[in-house]
Image (cartoon, one colour):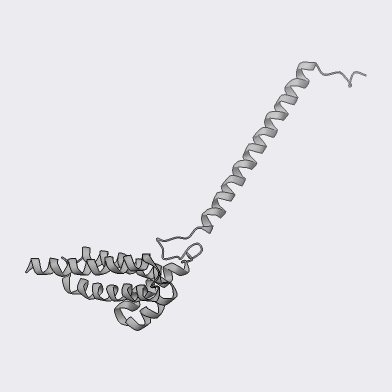
Length: 161
């Protein structure tokens, strides 16, 4: 029975402690790998603006934003088409036209002719949106503010001369 010696209790406790530490290290390593993997997957799921959407999923524009941008672009080239878009969502288009007219007003010093052309188009678009929703106070206010921006631009041009 020489080969079946009992191990001292201290030795058993040390082995159990070492096994426990080894298991904890393995679990920590596994959690680290899983966290890194999840972070990588989440990073791939986000859009990349710097590279023109070449990496990741392309950003999905909301319909209202797309409609606003289309209406603003059409206001410069096809007022009738812009008015048709304004009828679909008058409040959002009117607010977008008002914001665009304020932006054009801020650019009046650098390019007065271009700014006035854009202001005319945006005022017309805001008015069409207001007419499409006569009960909407938001559309009326936006159209009034766009007209006010045009009047301020006209006054600024006269003062500059």
